[in-house]
Image 1 (cartoon, rainbow, N blue to C red):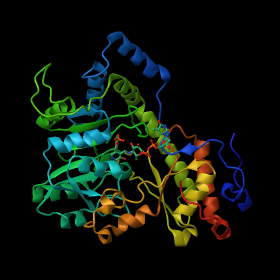
Image 2 (tube, protein in one colour; image 1 turned 45 degrees about the vertical axis):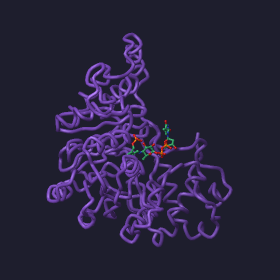
Image 3 (spheres, rainbow, N blue to C red; image 1 turned 60 degrees about the horizontal axis):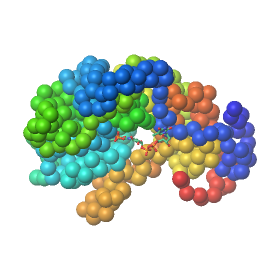
Image 4 (cartoon, helix red, strand yellow; image 1 turned 90 degrees about the horizontal axis):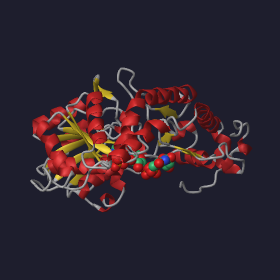
Length: 406
Ligand code: T4K
């Protein structure tokens, strides 16, 4: 049982009242299949004693995902970060790669870890996706590619980036970590650029506990990724290329198989929660709820709001502090932007002026709890609570202490 909605400012947990939720309400609570759908597959794994390395569940999952996304090849990998690293290594990228700073730090780290330099590009503040106009200005003699990111599962400007890459002879890949089941121009994400990379981390709409995949229509590239994720082995003792260990295990793939069956139902539940937030917050002064494009397929896994401090009467961090006190563990992804994280912030050649919109957006964004692990009534409570804070901003603000966001 959680508490009834707040009726007065004195009841706010940040001001000494009791929290709205007894237990923490998190962003990223995993969606789960029925126990049986998972455990009967685990039983099969025990029976076969095939635990990893091209096991039947991995092969089945790769086929299932490729069919679902409408792409020729899906190569399952141990996680999304490793999948990015393998892909850019196999593609032979060198020097600099243009990518947005407004993304999860793994996008940039994967490049850095492979000895490349991420050149950070600003975003379109409306979509939070990479700005292709600025991207073009960043192309230099050392640029070998572009890494587009479909932030929040909304497609980044695929057409413009494809044109840019073609005109300048650059490699184009996409970080589609958020975009499983989403479409761009009516076509499911997964087959754009040379290849795309998904994350199947536990917090993702479709997951395999930990996991990821590279998807592509390029037969040779798929073969090379398969080799690379298994130490370069072709057959038992024939190593024909350098490689690493990026294999997905059978238990992970078993979870994936169960999740794939459930995926449409999860999206339906996500969408319901998104519309509850939309009804609760859609018209609230100073709060912009990022809309999904109804012409596209969407997975609705991220519910993102932006706080316009002058109009809301409270800053993003003040609202976050109020939410956290109520045990609503909303997140400020992707604060403060990769370029303000190490090792990139110590790189004195990074021009922060160029990344103004990234900095502005990262000061305004809040991700709200959603997904099948969060009850619809709780979503309603969260929306009502945010409305309450904005409606009472004038009274709340002077009483808020300046404790740091955790
Ligand atoms: N590119 C992009 C654009 C990405 O967003 C990501 C990952 C990647 C690449 C890399 O893919 P992977 O290598 O991860 O496959 C999380 C995830 O760890 C990360 O996968 C994700 N993006 C990112 C957006 O969010 P954290 O540090 O916030 O996650 P974590 O583990 O603290 O979980 C968040 C909350 O979820 C927890 O506070 C509680 C809840 N939770 C989490 C887990 C793992 C649960 O309730 N149960 C769980 O099992 O980064």
